[in-house]
Image 1 (cartoon, rainbow, N blue to C red):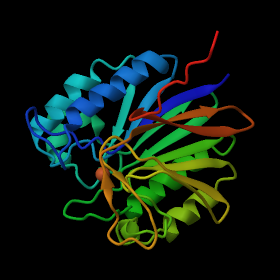
Image 2: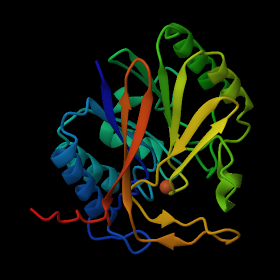
Image 3: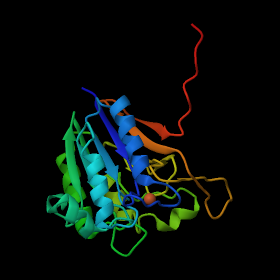
Length: 262
Ligand SMILES: [Fe+2]
């Protein structure tokens, strides 16, 4: 019994005919959809770690929904700092609201618990987890004490030693303490920083994926971070009882296959 799922992030979808930082993010999401349909149709589901829309207008969410409706696997969403909760709900429905009042969710599949946490806070670029969310997280983790857990969240909690560290989760200590109360948190996967990273922080694995919008370079000590127009990147998570693996697939600007002589 192997869990397989896709993580997309930072779609920054704009209304038809517009661009964001020179990119047609709707067209880029279409490329993600093509990659998933071609290469990952056996995945159990897809989660999207926020920054669904670039400017949070209903027209962007309508475009997003139209594209996601064609996804061959179930899709679960949470929000990022670019999203607008009320616009999102006006298109995707009030059923998206969790017990915390934010877009928090639990998915139980193939012996795992996956928890989506909404770290967006209206008017803020950095990430906030409310006291109620931390309590909700503690309860959801306690219910799954016998299972491995993966957390999906927009903002990175750990410092990546880059310019954007000051817009990560504010006061990550309660979040970290809640995670550490569970014996088998396998991964905390975030977007937000538009770059790929993996880290260990106090015994827990933290990963970021570059997502679907522009890609940030981390040439040190470059300040500010530079933006590039590719790749568009998804993560493919493979979970067994023994281990959890995260693959990265640059579905835009990926390297071409090398022809092998017959
Ligand atoms: Fe983003």
